[in-house]
Image (tube, rainbow, N blue to C red; front, side, top):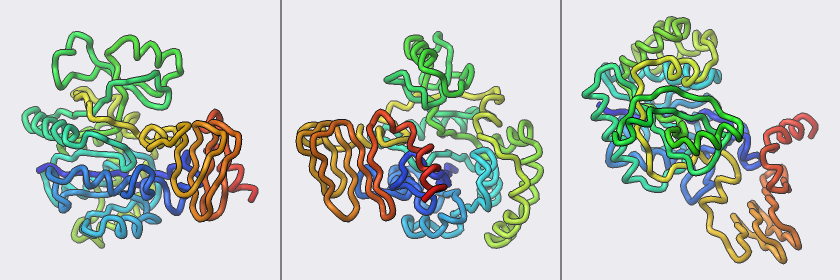
Length: 349
């Protein structure tokens, strides 16, 4: 039985000041009328029913998940009492899903990605599911062909001799490279962006967790599954004891039987305001307006207004974002500093 696990606990700091700790980017409508979380759930329709979709999130976002996914069963919301990175949240969720369906195949997705060709995405997910059913103990990750020398993503390397295959054995996972290495990866042709999407049988996942993250596995196997409320109560008592570690570093980089399928379905991780630009309609002068705004004698600006019209005069390559509390004005060359600036502002305002 194929189930989906959507990770929705991130803070989305690079979308500050619109994205805040109270309402991070996965709960915002950055690319259309739906929020990023709603888009993630809706693209699974036709393949995975809502009853088999689970969302793991922080306690602070439980109400937002309920509001935005009104059809999602309440018991399908898995609450992390404290953020411990991706590996513990996935292992926690795997134990919970296994208590409901002992032999489930779990497809794990971030909640804040853009996928433009949804039918292709569902077909690739179905192929991955079929592969897992036929290959006991295997894990599949979805990789994306790089279109630029991107330093913000991890990479997956596979053997060049297997380029004629649809599902390929992974040689290694590589952390985010510097620009020179990213350019070499792009030129080599056998490197894919790591999209952070995984498909595995729940028992395979828990076996890997036991092997490579035994302390976390040993703590979480003590959860109480007599009821949803018992599960939450026991989680509150023990979860803070687990180690904070990413699933890539903790499991994927060490696992042996890992395969990659190429996800040619128009993927973007929507990690910064630059990502929003790639998928937004542009006016004359390549300006983008979300809300009311105007650019006079200015090109390539991105304006996000909340209450009042924002007018830019004689400026190019500027980002303006109005939130309930703050107005940010930044040159686009400085967008990589937004997270740093956010922390300074919060500590001084």
